[in-house]
Image (tube, rainbow, N blue to C red; front, side, top):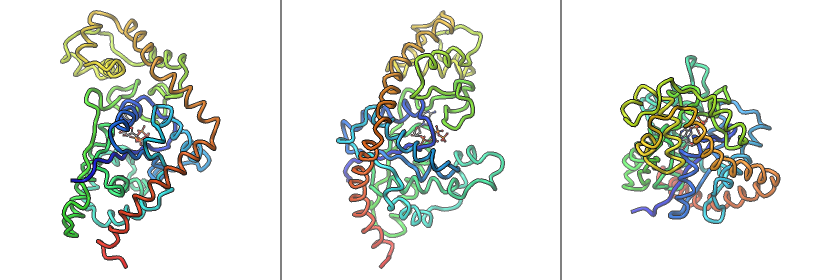
Length: 333
Ligand code: AQP
């Protein structure tokens, strides 16, 4: 049995939002109390779509600040950026040679992100899931906290690990990593369209609550959030065709750490303007302190760079030890 080890990453592609917080960061924080954890600012993933170099540089530090502001502790967890440990790229190449083309062709995130003109997407975007498998397997991580949108990539990481173990006849060399997906709300949807996930790259800033939004911005965005004309009912089935209403009620439930049924019973018969006031209050209570912590941390870039440097040194020790064995297994001299 492998020792339990957590790995997860966040792309430094702009402002982190409520989806990143509820889908990932919140569980990162609770896991660091129970297990050894590595949390990575995945800048190699970020460049699968073009990033302005100056902005990328700043976004790496801002994502690090968001980790710390959300409660990650650099003394408990290893916090570092992906490009600073070259083993990620090396193992990704080896795994590119293990993964089958047909497996990648099934990845729905590539289809979503590449859009209609797939010919113009970068090769990096296509093989992104192999780099993600390398991120996890480089440390032989056993548990990966992610939002539900990453479940398919995690399954691919398991397939790749299994095929490597089989091809090279090294039983259980790579553990098959388990996804840890939040039970209550695994996917936060856009505030403008309840069928699309909340995302940093969505054009409209009104589609998401950023961790850096002021209290006024949060209230304004929730006021403008799309709902429908029906009142709140306490029958969960009523929400099957009301994705925006369901999303807001789910966000409230998650922030209150209660089941969705409890929330709809609490607000049944009330209209959405009343509910939205309550939701805004909860959001301001949770998000505003994180936002002001991010701003404070960004005033001391040297400290953030130091956190990444120390994290990189620790990550690199584990990576090099595993890579030494991987190179031997593959047959490199
Ligand atoms: N809407 C979401 N609901 C729940 N979880 C989410 N995550 C992202 N969006 C949601 C989770 O956050 C972690 C980090 O994600 P990421 O930033 O590395 O990549 P992403 O999933 O591609 O996020 P975005 O916001 O959609 O970024 P862009 O627009 O740059 O592609 C992951 O665990 C993810 O599941």
